[in-house]
Image (cartoon, rainbow, N blue to C red):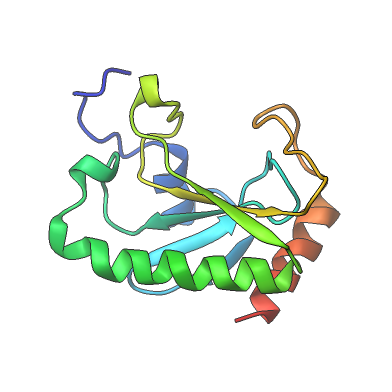
Length: 142
């Protein structure tokens, strides 16, 4: 997909927003939705997406950044607390050349622990029971 292509409303995150696909949700309000990555780099790896239909950060309206980033920060704090993480890695990939694979703006909130390397993203699906348990830990931290 070229970086100049228009937003595709059939992308997986848009389908999750519309309730067409399941997700292990940890937070939702009128601005954003946060849910676990099913192919996580660490336990509790969470994605935060805006409810606006935007491909990436360059497409996000300037006046929408503040409210969205408040949600990213709120989710990051809950992920760190709920997963008892020692730190976080927060990532956003822009465009195919930048590593973006789902063309709906999203931030990765990845819990980190000293001495525990990240798994390769996309290598394997996490077990359903692990996702369910991690989502419950994060939801309880809000």
